[in-house]
Amino acid sequence: GINYRKGIKKYVGEFFGYLQPEPTNEYDPEAIAIYHSDGHHLGYIPQNCTQDIHALDLPFPMTVFGYIEEDYDEDEHRRYFRGTIFLEIPDPNAKHPYNPKTI
Image (cartoon, rainbow, N blue to C red; front, side, top):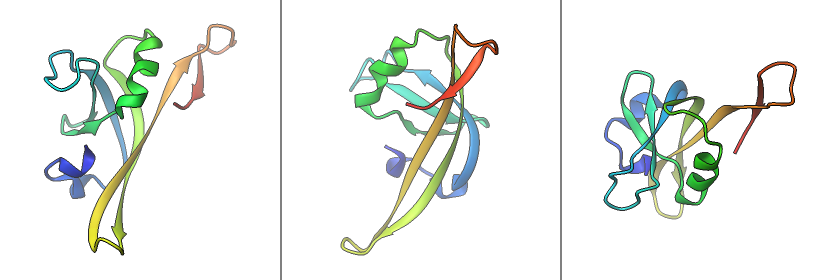
């Protein structure tokens, strides 16, 4: 969904933000939106990953670090954006309360 967001070019590069579920989303009640720390809606977690995030049973909003890349598709002659996020998942067995992992 990142390619459908207005003004996304402004956010190319690294960012801090947060995840927020959207239980009233008309297309997917399990949807999880990604927001920049300034409140701009950047996109959504892919549908095949939302169950994993909900299963963590962590409080929302969840803080994330991420980056957005701009690329060019030679075959279709168009620019597109791709985003990646990282979140820290608490590890109850660790001496330190957080152990970075990615989904």
